[in-house]
Amino acid sequence: MKPKLRYIDVIALDGGFLIRDPLGISENLFVSKEALLIMSLMDGSRDVLDIKADYFRLTGQIISDEDLMDFLKRLDDALFLENERYADALQCKRREMFTKGIRDMSHVGEVYPADAQACERFLKGPEIQERLSPLGIMVPHMDIRIAKSTYWEAYGRIKGDKDLVVILGVSHYWHEMPFSALPLDMKTPFGILKTNRALIEKLQSFYNFDITHDILSYRYEHSIEFASVYAKMIFPEAKALALIVSYGDEKFLKTLGENLLRVVEPFIHKTLFISSVDMSHVGKKFGDSLCYDPSFKDREYLRYLEDLEYEQAFELLEKDKNRTRIDGQYTNFVFAHILKKCGLTKGRILDYKVYYERLTDSKVSYASMVF
Image (tube, rainbow, N blue to C red; front, side):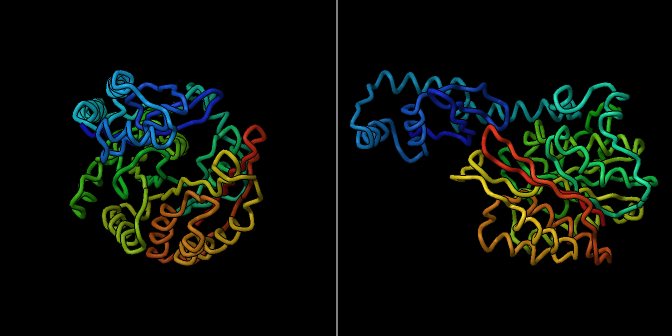
C-alpha cells in the first residue's frame, strides 16, 4: 500500500494545524506538526515502511506500526486519502448536486441578508446619475460588507434589460480542469437565477473533457455567488452562464473566449459579461514575510486592462510569476479578449481600493471597471 494524500488546505493554528477539505466532502481535522509531516510523506510513492524510514531520517523518532496504521485509518475514514472510497464519495456528491439542480447560497446570512428587501437595501448604494448599458463590467468578489461601494460603482450604473449574464469567476478551491461551467440554477434572495443549459451543451461541443467535471468547486465559490445575487436583483428575467476560469496559456484562453462568443452570439446585444475578480493578495496571510503596498502593480495592470491590452497585462503578471497574486490573471484575459473581439477598444476604471486586515498584517486590493 502506497497511501496518497489528496489535495487539502492547511491552516496553522495555536498548537497544531487545521486540515480542511476544499471540496467540503470531509470533516475538518486538527493535527500536530508531527502528524502533518507524516502526511507530507504520503505522496503515493512511499509504502508504509518508506514513510517510517523517511520520518525517522527527518526527525530521529520511530513511529510504531500500530500508530501509523491507526493514523492512516483515521485519514481514510475522513476521506482524506486518494483512493476508491474517496472516489466513490466524490461521485456521490456530484450526483447529489446534479440531481438537486440548484446551487444553494453558501454565504447568505453571513455576508448578505436572506430576505429580498433587506438584501436589496444592503446591496444598493447612493443613486448614480450616470446610466450605462455596458457589454462588460469587472467587479470584485471581496466580502461585500467591505467592498460594497466598489461593487455599486459598476452595478449602480447599469440600465436596460439583459437576457443573458455571463459570470466569469476564479477558483478558490480545488479545480482540475482549466475551466468549467456550472450546470445548475442558482439560488439567490431574489429567487432562482436560471442557467441557460443549452449554452453549456453548445460550449461542451468544442471540448473533449467534461466542462462540468468540477461542479463541486462551485459549492462555496463566492466569485460566482456574489455576482449571481447582483445579477438576479438587477436583471430578474435574465438567464445566466457561470464559468470558473482556472488556468491556461494564452492560446487556450483566447480559444475559450472565442468559443464563448460563438455560443452566446444570438444574445450578444442583450448580454452582460461579468469578470468577478479581486486584485492583489499580499502580507503574512498569503505567505509574505511582511505586508506592503501592492498598488504600484495593480495600477499598471489596470491601465493595460483599461486599454484592453490584455496580452500585455498577462505578460506583466507572468514576468514575476504574479508575485502580488492578482487572482484575475486568467479570467480577465478571457473577459478582455471577448470584449476586444466584439469591437471594444477602451474601458474605464470606476474605483480602486486596498483593504488592510490588521489581525493578519495582510492586504487585498480590488477594483471595478466598465466596458
